[in-house]
Length: 110
Image (cartoon, rainbow, N blue to C red; front, side, top):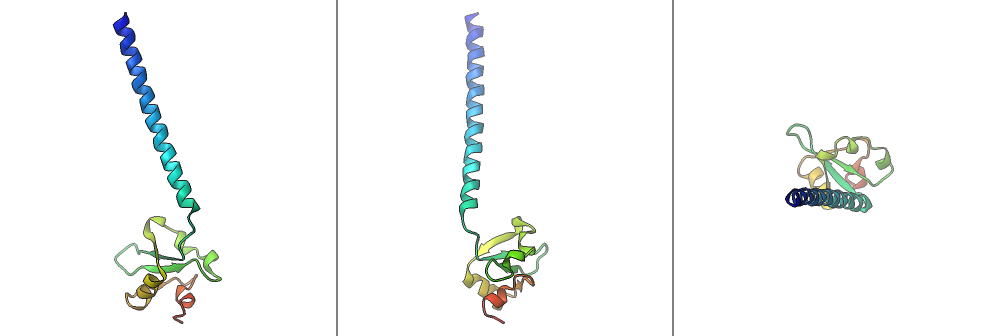
């Protein structure tokens, strides 16, 4: 009987360890989510196209940034970039400026 009791208790200890690991993983994911939410949004983002075309550049600066519908379509395709990268993408690399938030105007290209 004592051997049976020991096996049951060991199983319970293992189950408790799994619960602790699950809780720690969720707490870590929540902490990462809160840290990302606390960071200010980037001033410039590049949204890659579905195909192989050039990216679309968006800005969070200027009058139209709050109404830009396009930059929030698919966060999996959006990456933050610096002002210099946005300038280079629009002037050298052939990226397309968003027609709503007009990053080319904010950058002084027009």
